[in-house]
Image 1 (cartoon, rainbow, N blue to C red):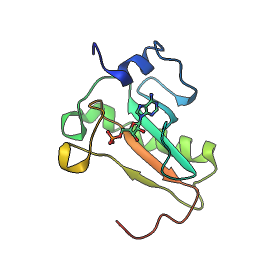
Image 2: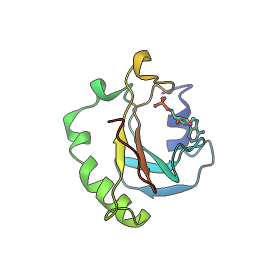
Image 3: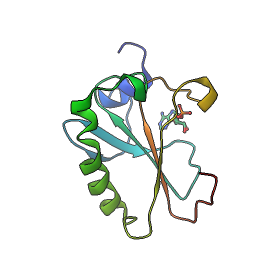
Image 4: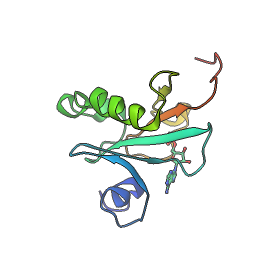
Length: 110
Ligand code: AMP
């Protein structure tokens, strides 16, 4: 989608170090990490948020995350996945993304 920052990352118009990529998703480091490991996973197709995604794409998500967590070396110790939808959640980028947080004890907020 025109003027979408994350679409520009998908299109490689904004250079970003890609950690993992397949036909459906791309993963890269968050620019403002909130944990020792803070990776964003985004669908290549533009969806505004979690309420907008189609089932065929989300069905591919678990396998991608499993491969990613293995690659990051966090599968055993664990990780947290968060997605923000809308202003009360603090969503600032309106291209669906999942935050994968890991690398320390993440506490008991959720
Ligand atoms: P939110 O929409 O609140 O779920 O979070 C958007 C996230 O995108 C924030 O954690 C930002 O630090 C991150 N972010 C914004 N621009 C970039 C960028 N160019 N590369 C990587 N992460 C980004």
